[in-house]
Length: 350
Image 1: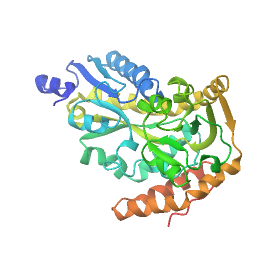
Image 2: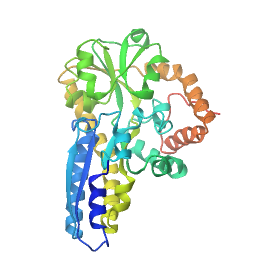
Image 3: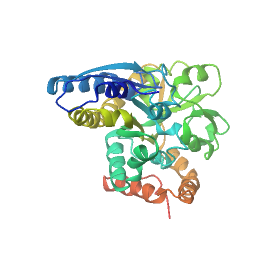
């Protein structure tokens, strides 16, 4: 199936950058707009792209939106962009363990910085030094990476109060992709889930807690089935991305493409800025709705220590598949420390 923009390209040939075109792009995500990055795709990326293109060129821009899984589900976005079902898609790398096994690298090093701006900058440093992370998209997946997306700091919301790791032993807790390992290796029962189904699944007892940042706990009303929110500080992860179908990208006029990349870079920065700005406000909002617990730092320390073996094994497994996992993970550790962060456990990755 050809993308809308690509179909237009075929019909009009996009002869020169000066030639005015009416460009329609299918854009979406499996996540709802209540998830910060998806909301920013609508309220920032779409708005700014249309405004700047129409102010600075002769082109017009329109969007066909497909959020909340209305075109593709959370696990289908990468393939949807690859096949042209979407022109532009936002998604979590966590749902692509086969296509993007290394891209969730910050999740392989939990208890890092809770600052989304810092998380994004660390990720940018790593991408700059390891070209594979960017090149895999056009080389193998028929798309171009437009932006990395930072999330707010992850904590743990539950249906029950808890104070120590021992209190969580045997409890069913939801997570997505590789962060399920944070649970399993600490003696907690992991249940694979996603934000799209988390409210219903927690309400119906599929699991009794969920690893999640405060924006989702507020905006998706997860505080209703989960009236306890513990500030464990798993870290802010840059493990989402926004991509564009490569056929679409190659078919766009040069002046449009230039503005597209400019707006995408600004959108990328906004994911860190907005999540950082909103974190304290949302935690305070939760304090007025449910029980928010400040955990003893020793709990965080103990949980990090329980994951040391898994971190090393993950690096070894990915290296055995020919991926530069040890380089990437050591870069994350080093770049975080260079920015003043102290890890509760300085994971050893040989």
